[in-house]
Length: 298
Length: 255
Image (cartoon, rainbow over all chains, first blue to last red; front, side):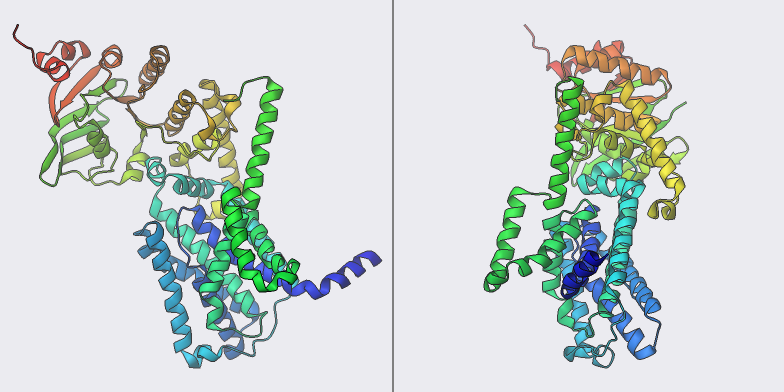
């Protein structure tokens, strides 16, 4: 008991890192879900901005209950995802990336413009800190659980087929538009949810918070950790959050270390740290089984 | 009784008439062949049937359903399964996952049940797994169930593709050059499987340019050349047709 208390005491100063990991994982999951459906959209930070400003405005200006405000933020993210799905469904690959990037930039511009609502360039301040770290952990785990369950069933199978070979998916009866819309709705809702949570733990919001840098950080986390499993994004975000802490002495070279790490991972662990390890373990298990049966490997 | 009927179907690309309007009917319990030399327009016909290309003329009828304007996934849901000339599996997915994705058209759970993994969704996945195991057994592939499909040998990948097509429990099975790159013994074995499927009442459409395989197997044959239907009839009729011989072997030279 005492040991646990001492542990908690030691960990307490690092609690803000836990916050960052949970929020970052939420964003990374939102990003990973569109990748899993074979879409190259980077709209996550835009959905997050909608959820964050929605929750902050409702709590501070309208006196909403925080849970309701976050729920509204989630809903707004979901609606934005649905709206964005239609035009993006007509595009492929890098064109989707550019169009979704434009969506994010337009949103950031709107946040700067509607000063009376969002605080404009000065930011939105005086948000009460209502979200506790344990809530973030619970909601993150619930989200991961839901995405895992969803991935095991029909939706996961359809996503998998669309990611690997869209024409084949269609020739098996998978309606590409339907799953495209589902992936965007999920991506929007998850980013809206974690955006709302982020707003209610950070005291203030600024438009830049949802600009290009968060987008890059989210993409990096997904590439680093893995994009096919729900644990991959968590691993990626954890590495990216903890790395600067571990390499404090290298603080000046942080961006360089960041870049180097990404290059190394992409070259040697092409499916991300977690997903690659999982695949290797599977291969080893299959080899063991084959050896046990005395059968030759295919 | 015709399950798939093409009425005056044709395709023009810009000014080029790739396939001149023609009729074709595919019946259950029968293996129908579509043959022709390279460049005859066979692949174009496949793409017209499966909804990849828009028709320039004519109509495609599937039982009572008009599939003339239908996109690919609607054609598949109506009950048409296909294999590809070059194998197209989901290489990262395991063999059993590749087969289960073929059962997509038999799903009957709601989106909400799938979203939250409700018992109905889980039961359905279990059922699909059992069905997939049965198919794997039939093709002697049980021990490769959990291997990534991309790791298998060419012949085994062909089997996986066949199993995936059969997982749709299709009314029409479209085989696009299924024995290309396969030796005669293996081809004969596949031929027996196709015959078995036809005997069970499936309509099989075999696209081939291997004359020998087609004449041995098909009940009725259509011959394309240069985008035109030049002959049709039983295998024996078609091979003895001078027009067909000319298309395949070239013009007779006067000695």
